[in-house]
Image (cartoon, rainbow, N blue to C red; front, side, top):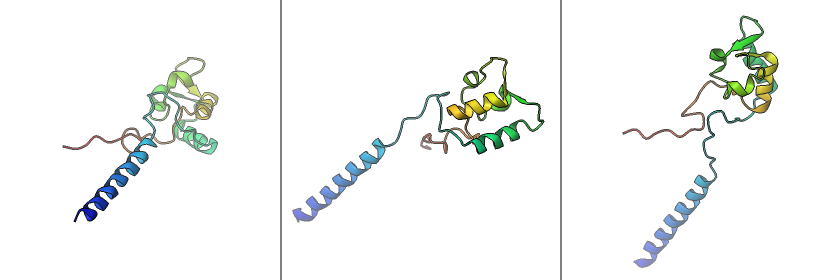
Length: 114
């Protein structure tokens, strides 16, 4: 009677240990404005073309906010808008993300529903 109980307890203990190792492998959420994973030059160029649909040669902070993690860091000349060169440099440094999503689904944990 005790052998099946001991075997079951050992299996549960191993499962909990392995599960804790998997949790230890996840990275902590990045601070706002921290560089993210770099997007490719093709993604960067495509995103620029969508954001600068009017072909004005620059985009404002309001346009960039959904994709640029740290506008001030990317706006190297401080004029309040991004040129294509500044935007590309931001992509190269990991300050531009291709998806405008934030929160759950973007690597951040969801809050439990009650």
